View 1 (cartoon, rainbow, N blue to C red):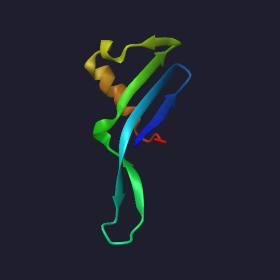
View 2: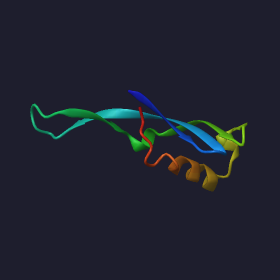
View 3: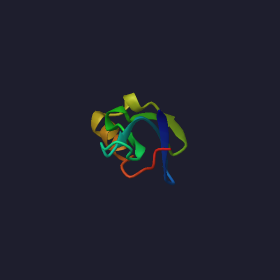
View 4: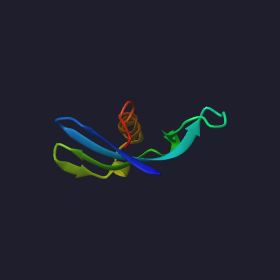
Length: 76
């Protein structure tokens, strides 16, 4: 299932998507929940100071930093 998350501050907004997979305790009858697969997290859009930015036009170090800004966000 695809989930979304948003990072927003005064100067920057970033929309992320990610895929989830079902996880459980590995015991028959245990509860299940959805877990974000880190390898599927993707930046869908970024706006800096009101300007839409093409993420791929940014230096790799900056793209990596933008990607890491989703740490701690709740994917819904």
